[in-house]
Image (cartoon, rainbow, N blue to C red; front, side, top):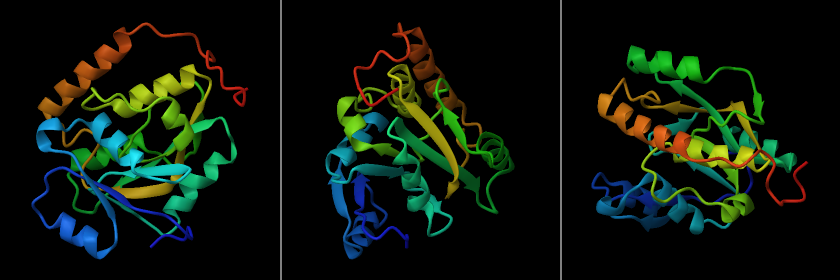
Length: 212
């Protein structure tokens, strides 16, 4: 349960066979599907957000669980600043998580809140974005990973800020590097190299008048 009075749940299903759809149906979730052969992280996120109706959209991976009832409220509170495009929260390991995963999560997600005006680290396993900003610039449909950092980079270039909010914490089943999986590392590196190779406009080039 969450202490935010009203919210909807949109589940993006990727050909699951583990009873996910049955459970979602019992709890009244809105379900949208993307075939496994078409799956890319950016595309799946955009599909889910298209079917959401709220002003702010929380994004949480299927293997992440909020640690307390104030998770949603802790994310939403940051949007009182209209320059904030997105907020990402803390990720903490489970007691039986691998030691490598525990190290990675504890090292990456600390206890201090940060307002990022140039730094573009962002993580969609536990985040919330402003819907009107997403409509202005959705996630890149073609990126199969690191779509969150690509989006955040584009946001800070437009004069928005990204916030890290440690109070909005979730348990993450595995670390952000998935116990050092070399294939995942290769995929992530390819995407980051592609992002870094793109020419970038100067910061603050957005025409959005509300951004100072």
